Image (cartoon, rainbow, N blue to C red; front, side, top):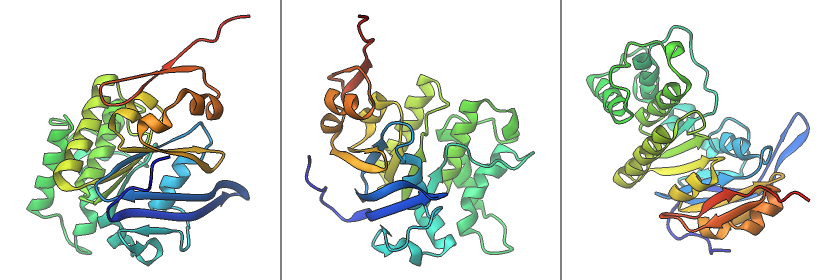
Length: 266
């Protein structure tokens, strides 16, 4: 395994236990994400990936287990947390009849005073994000009229408009075609390098995850079973053990490529 990464931590998780309806989901999870790093959490269905992101984002109680940029998560007020952490969930709640522009403007809520209105700077920030995500011309469209891939880009646009330092992405490319998958991840990576953004993501596409992640963490049955670079985590042995998958792992341009192999018939 690789040693712990160097640098100031953006996220520290120590001994995290989460149970839902009496069922243990996460069991003693430890995780460190250095500021400016991209860490992707992988694992089979039911491993606890989304639950981990929800806990880091403050959507699940995690007393004393999580620290964000040196501050205990429980000490952050909701508005302060929203300026630090932005989350893109798998199925965001979409208010009926809301336009793309109004939805993305919700990302600026932490900066708008109570009973106040958005400023020119808020509007400009939203338009810049919409342009970067190829959503120009969608401003007046209702979210309900968009395709799944278009909505996914709008959800990401709201998170980016939030201007947070830590971006939590739960399966950000699940509804996108291959072109928009690359486009969205490239935008996130460019913003990460340009503005020191820290990314903690979950992804099912292992090859795509390995292309962008600095480090990977594999969960299985609620526990961390592997952590390291994509080359250290995406191995045929680990994938066979924890995914029960027959795969071939081959070198790629930026990371290993995981190729499913059909088992031989007896």
